[in-house]
Amino acid sequence: MSNGVVTYAAADFHEPAPGRNGGTLKVSAASDAGSFDIHALSNGNIQWLGRILFDCLVYQDEEGNISPWLARSWEISPDGKTYTFHLRDDVTFSDREKFNAAALQTNLEHMRDPATKSPLAAAYIAPYLDGKVVDEYTFEARLREPYTPFLDVLAQSWLGMISPRQIREAPKTIATQPVGSGPFLLQSYTRDQGAVFVKRSGYHWAPAVTRHVGAAYLDRIELSYVPEAMIRFTSLESGQSDFALDAPAQNAAAIRANPGLVMRSRIRKGNPSRSMTFNVEQAPFDDVRVRRAVAKAIDREGLAWISGFGEFLSKADLLAANTRFYQPENSALAYDVAAANALLDEAGWTGRDAQGYRSKNGQRLQATLLTYDNPAFPASVSVAIQADLKKVGFDMPIEMLPLTRVTEKRYAGKFQAIASGYWHTNTPDGLFVLYHSQSISTAKLIGQNAGRFRDAELDRLLSAARRSRDPVELQKLYRHAQQRLVETVPAVPSVESQVLTAYGQQVKGVIFDTSHNVPFFTSIWLDRGQP
Image (cartoon, rainbow, N blue to C red):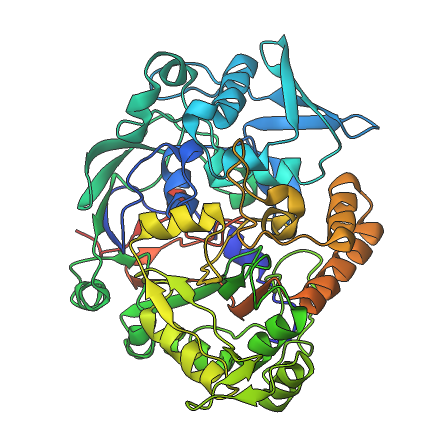
């Protein structure tokens, strides 16, 4: 449903019954992350890849509360600035290094080391000041300021634990020969082609929430990178592959109609996909009336069909519908061409030029949309936006550049509007990551507030939410923050950020990770019939 809170059955996150050991699972994904250094990436693949090779300190439960994983328990000081973790004493990395307090300290330092160039993990633990090894299995983390999302972010795949020996002695090898404590080991990797993972014997510390006991069931996972959507579909249909991690939306109906296949569609927590983010420091988007008009002129249902073929839920507010403290705010930015025209009139764009575009003082109402060729944001979406805006007299040329150039312009603020994509996190603090003024990039910070948006009231609400541990107060703060965002319009939401997966009926034990809503491979097993 697109107009309310979305929840999933608790059973989706629990292994239903013990599975059968053995077998090779053949999996396809659309593209390669290019590295296995989870701390150095923000790539979406890490959501599932991280769970194959690595473990986290904590895990969210079915309700989004924090539960144990490598940390058995923890205490938080009354001022919210000291976290004392009591760790498991039976966990090892695959190079036989122990997971202990010193290993945790090494990992936190690696996440924020400038040499790691982390666009995500470093930002998520930015309030971390320093840590103390109290004894071998007790670690004290001290924060600069209270930061309630600290435990939530530590549950995410990008913040998994890497062998401290590898971090100390050979950090450059993490990219292609990672050493984790997870349920599988990387056996081989060929860039842009694929990877092979093999079961780690002796693994016995899966998160309790999953109800999985012992080692993974599968002997091997053979992962192939297949950019062509049609090939991912046909290889699944023919049985050449068992599992499509990026199931093509255009084939979803055919997958559902096939009795031998299963289709699953899940919403990622955090921020929905945005059709564009405005640079509020440049005309014409320094005027909130123009930003609101553009948001109301875009037909989101149309965009949802173009990008998702009926699989994606359209979105008119700025927090994902399955995120804690989500409050639907659908009406303020709802599709309304008449209201968009009235707002542009009010902003003074009342003239018309020979081509029918609006003008003011002889200047055409125009802004360039910066984009790149991206399967998650097809060029057809930009063209549809351009056509919608033309109907209200707004001229939006499209500039498509290579991703490296787009990224360069994005961090330098050299654009008027940028085609967005999504930024997923497992907490409503995703709003701080994208829209707080402290998230604007600086020489020292890779920030995600690309539009250089500053709003004192929003900053106050999101900062207060970081300090509070009271659910009633948090509900209120996040409700007001969501209202403020649809009033100030730093970006245009388009659709929920959705994970589409498909697999053959022979694949059993598919459950979903509580933070990322991606498949959790430790519990998967194959039922190919008795030999």
